[in-house]
Image 1 (cartoon, rainbow, N blue to C red):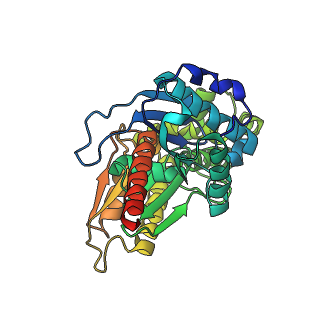
Image 2: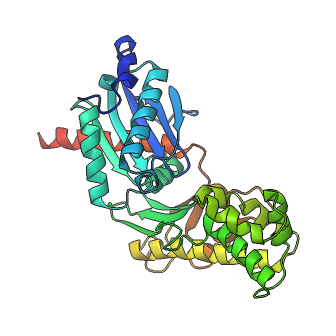
Length: 350
């Protein structure tokens, strides 16, 4: 067990207690959340609410966005903060699940696993997944079965069968086409404003609304604003303006949202078809977990509701789930479920 780069962040351990705990981490492009929970019995129904000991928050941990060193520093710091707040140490940890955006290949997983093994004692069970897996687990309370659709700054659809097969669609970032994401919606809106200003596209309320929001006086100024800091989250923050214009009857904004619904639904359908989650006749039941700000049902133009309607036309067995716990909690439950399965398997083979 090493201290890795930031030895001083583990100095609190000298005063920590020995209570056994689980760490679950949800790392995204915008923020990273780590929760610490006590070891709980899986033979009984999960307590409601779950007994969480601590929650820590940090910035971006996607290595594609900030680089591998900065991502690791963020991950280590947020785990240390969660353990410190809970009065626990690394030696008290039974299992850790890191679900991090940008983990798209087994080589990504193995690099992080090797790094985690340098931080935690050998007895700790370690699991690394894409952040979509934690989002699925927070809807299914730690079980990997069904499909999750995430639509926030970016978007991805991810699914698992009960026998462990998995598939994903989208999630390739804005350049390669995360259409339907917050970034995708807002980028199309900015493009529509410029097209209207040039005379290449129809007039749209998006121009006045977006310019007012950004305190700009002309569409010309959008060019400088956009490229001064083209970060995904900064662009995606304009989605509420698109929704407002659509609700006010603007056809350009409505078309953008309708297109986003279709793209999000197509991502889910691609995963469902590849895994056969719907069965041969398309009626088998499977959970469809809906996560992310774009899908939140807080507006009259409800993107999430429209996506569900679109999918249900072909897959009547899909039952939507709006998670009651955050993805970091799903990661912790997944860590504990996976750890218990491994322990039981080892005991059986002895």
